[in-house]
Length: 222
Image 1: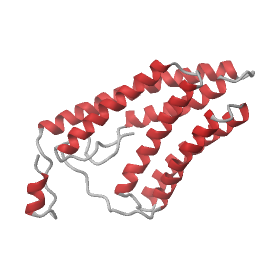
Image 2 (image 1 turned 90 degrees about the horizontal axis):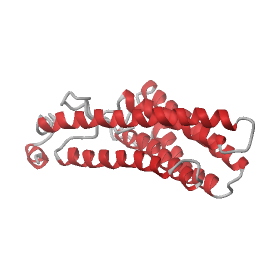
Image 3 (image 1 turned 120 degrees about the vertical axis):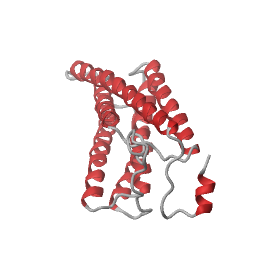
């Protein structure tokens, strides 16, 4: 889920991505972000089974578009710095919005919100320290992607498990299974990011770009 930009544990920067804005993947990411307030209204506004199904459909569409924009970016060579920011931001916002909405609805306990929230606070502090030392954000790990996938599967199932229906028990059990696996992977990925950050900080400031002027190199030093 974390933003890319530093080679995992290597201590060297990845090639700089272009500053493109008008790309298909970026448009998809913006559309995903625009869906967050709609999702919150569906869950916390009507509070009906029909609205919950629409909210679940929006989560599924968000997950599918997350996979699609990555495929398009690679196929059309439309990777960009903005895309590196928008894509994980959309993932994080959907997870935060869903967790808080489920807790308000009484579908999940508030301690689960704390478990996931503390991890986000720890990583936010870590990323701030890295940026202060001149490093970019950490490269997304497989564990982080797997954790996000598990949690995005879990929350729709928990929504459906809260309904009075024949499928409620099965979806509730499956949803909690994904929550347990996703939360564990979420923290495992966080620990891996902390290890990477520690190695980068121990290595000193990042190497200067060949195109960087002497004044810029001087200003970049901590």
